[in-house]
Image (cartoon, rainbow, N blue to C red):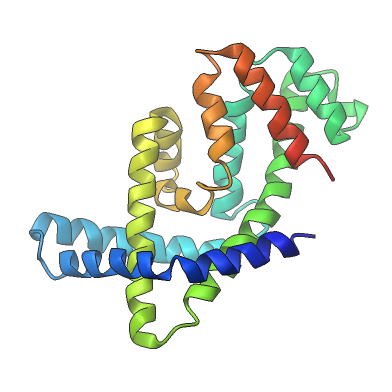
Length: 219
């Protein structure tokens, strides 16, 4: 189903290798104390966290216990929170959710979030794994630098989330998921942009809501 997306992920993984190597060189320099002891200790803690996150992302790829699904549910709950009931019901009908849920806003929203999170997890996990395997197919020495670059990207992704969506960042951090956000950042960029405009520009948010749902629930 996602062969085109996976092929693009592999291509993107190969093309971005030089960038990852640059990130890896910078982080390795910091790991050896080039930027001071504080940066070195911070990197050491992040290294352990990201290693566990990647392992769990693959081990629990399409499971509710995996980091990708957990992050998606937090984001989607925020996405659908406080929007009118009729929009929730419309989205639920589009998703094919049975009438059993339609009597309760809470139950309908939860069912919608679970369904979309499951669908997105399958897509994102397939692309992430394809992209990472393409990068790790290089030699051992370069592979080590690419892993360092990957950890650096995870750290920067978490910092971007902290600045742009502090509420979601804190929820992820409370579950030790902030360093895993990079796994979904690209795929959820449109949803995150919509969340930002929900209170400031509701008309534009509603338009983006429909566009996002049409993309996700198209098949």
